[in-house]
Length: 229
Ligand SMILES: Nc1ncnc2c1ncn2[C@@H]1O[C@H](COP(=O)(O)OP(=O)(O)OP(=O)(O)O)[C@@H](O)[C@H]1O
Image (cartoon, rainbow, N blue to C red):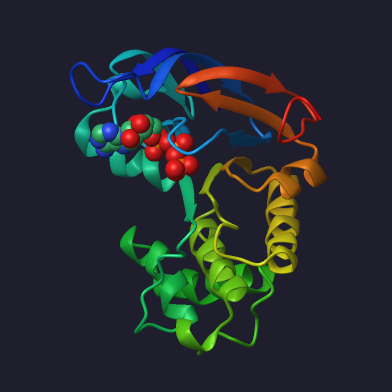
């Protein structure tokens, strides 16, 4: 599903690599935590998968494609198959829950009848049925993140990339979000989640990939946040 072969990323000439010779393979249906201290390269990894950044050296395959071979005009097609969720939700503040989610199928030209069935279906999946008309500020943080997850999932992507999705949420709300992500993963969606949240990583016991100064220092199945525990 995602394969990195000796991938390095150097942003500025002379700077130390943000990613340094990283090789790993993520299979379809896996749930992978990317951990490591601030600046260790987690976001860089996710941005490379989205082709928001390009590697300085090495090869990246995602969804069966060599990302170096994808022409610029085909990048939106790649990104359509990858849902994204961020720490800061990134909702449109003047649009309702329904509209925030409907944007994703609208921009790829899905017909109205499809949107009218797909949006309520995904809102039910994330536990927000009945809240379609609310504006983001009328929702709790956890509910706002559920809207963002619904928007990421409404086009049924094969992969969901989540960058610190619980970073702005309290522990109890975070557990609810993780239950939802786990449920989404069990329906077959591959999930890669960058996080600093040690409690969540320790509870979920999924594959853990640890970066340190851009180097992959650990790849552990059913892992914990800190290797020494
Ligand atoms: N667009 C950029 N231009 C220059 N340097 C960058 C850029 N993006 C990231 N970096 C640098 O690359 C390194 C890795 O950053 P990255 O954002 O991938 O780390 P991270 O593990 O996601 O950190 P955090 O947990 O704080 O989000 C850092 O040294 C950072 O300063």
